[in-house]
Image (tube, protein in one colour):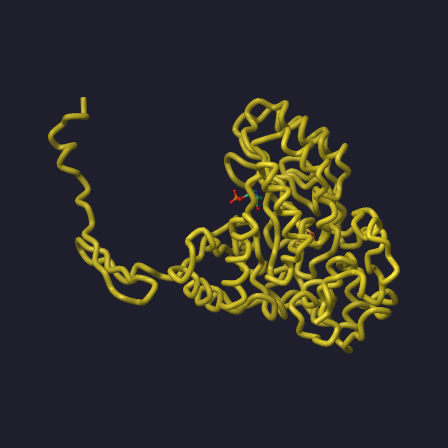
Length: 385
Ligand SMILES: *Cc1c(COP(=O)(O)O)cnc(C)c1O
Ligand code: SF4
């Protein structure tokens, strides 16, 4: 196990705490080349080939903070699998796509995706602190892929100002927290100036990749724009370091309700015990597990994907066995643009004429009578008029 403490970590042993705790230092010192990676890690042949070949698809990027969680002695390390490229990334299976969620087809302005009646996804940057090898938006994220993110902020704001049906705006990217406080505040202030926008959400992996970004100043700024919610992205309990837990605590103290969106990944978290520990530890950080995503059909991700059947079995091992708040909704984004589709183990065993046959988490069977369609009280007409 590599140590979590920077003072003993060989590659960065002479860093001052001030530098280490500075998010801009962390970004400047990201591992971004094969050479930098090999200075710190003995790569397997598959990793080395992946790093050479996949760099034109999604850039290599790992913050020193996150890199310290990689187990240098274990090529199967769940942290390593998320950020160190592998050769499998450059072989595409026939079902895979460059835009698996069909976002480009739902853009109402460049960078603004409207798939649902009352909410939009606003892609405000193409940069992240580190790059997840399975990123569903790798076509535009990191600046090296086949497309460029060409968000037109003026056009997006014009759309939002003139569409009163939009009540919820989700800032994403890339990672919105890579913007400076000033730039981010500019966006939030402008959104808050639109009366029909009730809710603003930020999707960010910064608390995990770059917890130093969650400064008291950032939190003080964010709290001026309530109700502001945030979704973070934690896949494995090992990511909940002291620094990340403190960063999440600062966000929670700023009154920001926190949710987590995990991606179900083979060799990372497709294990009942790991998922249970992750979900319980998230609650300790005041983060409510929100979604568990079936891995999207992004090109070159087959080695990280599990079957839906396996996902359902994992969900079956959560419900009933722990706090209801700890249980995320398992979803698949309908390939090509279907949006999020909930996937649930079957708790309805059968529906007979007038009863539902149900099973509980232990597999015991219960019956519940189906209500007749016309409740008696309505037939008596008391509230009918
Ligand atoms: C996920 C997503 C949203 C937000 O969905 P919620 O279920 O409300 O969290 C909105 N728009 C798009 C295009 C999305 O993919
Ligand atoms: S943080 Fe999100 S947007 Fe960035 S690489 Fe990871 S999955 Fe993609």
